Amino acid sequence: MRKTGIMLGTGAAVLLLGAAMLILGGRKPFQNLSAADMVSATVRLTPPDRTVQIVELKELADYLEDVVIYREDNSFREYSGQGVVFNVTMSDGTQTEVMAYNPFLVLDGVGYRTKYEPCEALSQYANSLLEREDTVLVMEEPPALAVVSDMTSHQALQGSYSWQRIDQNGTSEGIQACGGHPLEYQKDLQPALETTDSAAVLRFMEEPDEILSVRRWSDAHWGEPSAEGEEVAVNGYEIALKPGGYIYEVQAGWDTDSGYGGTASYFFYINLTE
Image (cartoon, rainbow, N blue to C red; front, top):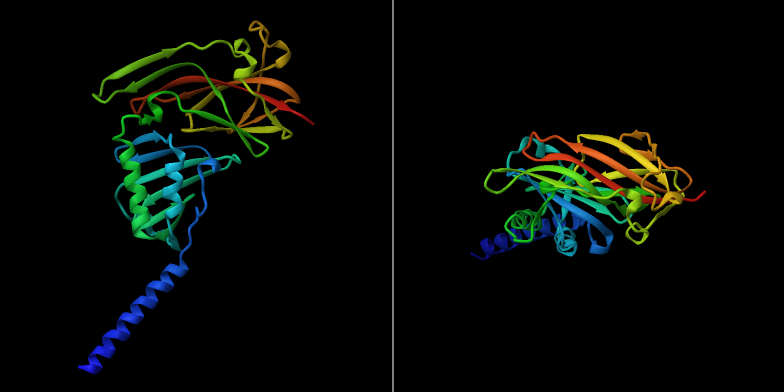
């Protein structure tokens, strides 16, 4: 009996040692993450194919801070089930994609084995957002646009849009919103993005199917909506900037194949110093 007891004790010790090694081998990729490190975030749940804008960034930061990853493992592509994908825009302008897909956590397309409990909590948190009264479905209206230049992210203002959406009862509803000309808005509503970089990147919360046009006006014409603007070339989602202060307008379009979409305009003020 004493021998059996010693063997059981040794086995328990081996299990404890193995567990300790597993914990020591893991890492927290978002350790010390705070709400101040993020500008905006959304989560896409599939199913039910819904994208939610996350308002309380601190809550998201708390869940992300707890997740633990171990060895790289991309076999998640062979699994089926619900995936929840968080798209986070950081305060330095970078974007990070995090997919909770137990027993995996996928960071920017790279899969890792993950600690079960924090990953499951992250997934449940995403699903709980659909049940909240203050939940904002991103595609209920045109998605937000952030402009990134010189490692700084700047929120664009929403202009006019024509939008189609499907309500909770499955009924299609059309929305029209008329905004003023970019040069008609007060300066204090458009704080300048100060940059020394000659380019800026357009970061939509959900990428459009097409960027229809980009135009700009010198800030010397502020208050003169009849002033003629100039076309700006777009390379993917990058636009070239012109030295000095300019107000930019972006028009983009989303297909309505998924039951929502339309066209929307955005504007922002950039001052490029050489």
